[in-house]
Image 1 (cartoon, helix red, strand yellow):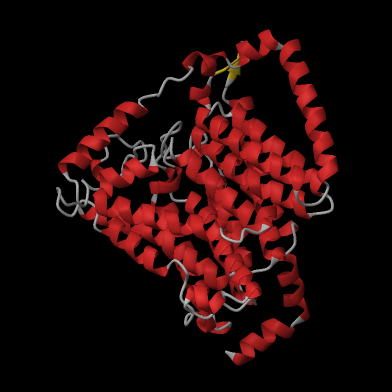
Image 2 (image 1 turned 90 degrees about the vertical axis):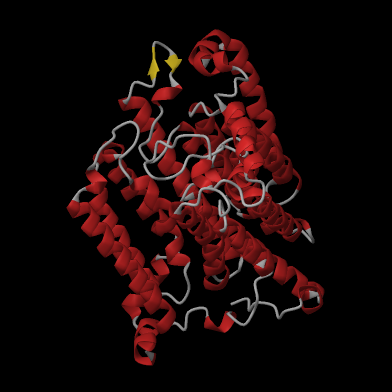
Length: 478
């Protein structure tokens, strides 16, 4: 392995390829082809290219940064033309050729990840350093695995609990140990988020243009379906990507560009007609706007931007009030209707009352899923933990959440503030929807969480309190 490692380290062509993977062109490459895949239904071919490029990155790079862009992008390449659920109900993904290609791709990724660890000695030098959250992660994993154990036990409940534990905990450990921590790495993640915003904006425009969403001057949100998700999904994602844009706005010389990208992301969230995204996104926007106007680069410019945009907004509302009211009439007519959430929450509490210790299991959630064998959700993280995992699982989650909050707010830095706001955005929309229990949002969550822990350790080391407060040696900074 030493020869292979030396070849990858010293070969000029490999070095250029590795350098390209750390530039903004790399996530832009995935975003462009993901949009092409989405619009044309060629995800099998473009997905194969994603896998080959991503696996190459795992082999030639000594850390997992080349994994970020394809991991965060691939789900949005799944075309609406072949969606197994709304609005297409296609059996494309269940056809034998596609299943074979998917199995080969999964095997290639697994082998490449193992070879990455073998060639570059992986994260072996870090394993002797305990994660700060190791004790609460163990409790949370047990709470998820034991869901419904005293109720009508189903193997699928345990399997789904294991999948959630893997997404929330194993990926957190993978990124904690496998990503270097410095401002360039945080910037790389945020730039990946920027191109995802452009990608999702492109998909939103595509849906508006090709699916008759805006007809007779009225936006019909029930037609805002993407195949990989619905209007609430895209709106929620835009919400938790906003803080990443404000981080770039606060730290980069050309930050005004990302300031505008954050505004654009919230505008996209509004045009998804997702009320939870509008509500939580508005709060996230306000907090980040205040922050970027008082700390970081270009504070004066952002204050001027804010005043100008505020004036333009007020003028536009007064000038086009009737047109805007008609455009958003479908959503405005719903007002504060709960869309059935209160009924779901009441029935979920009843399930908890019947099985208070370990809950009724994830498949006992009183909401029918439209995604095949995946269980329905309560559209509220805490209530779902109560319903599915009972008092034990919900208590484990709340203790885990308290530990993460403490880690982000103590001796807060600029990096930890904005990564924390990414998580706040995700958790906020998850109080009214089921984002945290979907399979792809935890990728964003675990990366931000890993950065938060690494930054906290660096802060404690700087203060000379790392060993005393953590009880373990600090992770190397790489």
